[in-house]
Length: 171
Image (cartoon, rainbow, N blue to C red; front, side):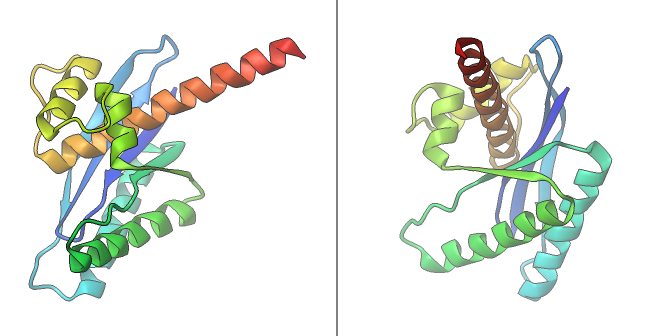
């Protein structure tokens, strides 16, 4: 069984989703939520908290990989720097645990989940609900995005395995 932790990084709220693909190909949601840090806490302490909380999740669920949303540079440079710092804490936690790391742009995640790279938040949540056969769409948005990143990686992993098997069969 493949287990992946998907991460939507942020310093105030880091969304995560732990998703497994069974031997039969079904996807199961093992856990999801958000790692929150207090805005009045010094940045280095917030980053340590994200790092430690993620290491706890990694140790609890023993994933084979961590999939992280790539940084999207919008208009707010300060926010981009803050998200970049949170990504650094996530990447370090994964590296120290010896895990593979995969990175996907928001458009790649939306394409994999909804079939459209400009899908809205609600579309992504509804498709995550359908893919995982959940009773309701996961929330908050950050957690749903973390789940979507994990699903994106599992789909990418399956595709790469099929391509490798086809290439091996041709040899």
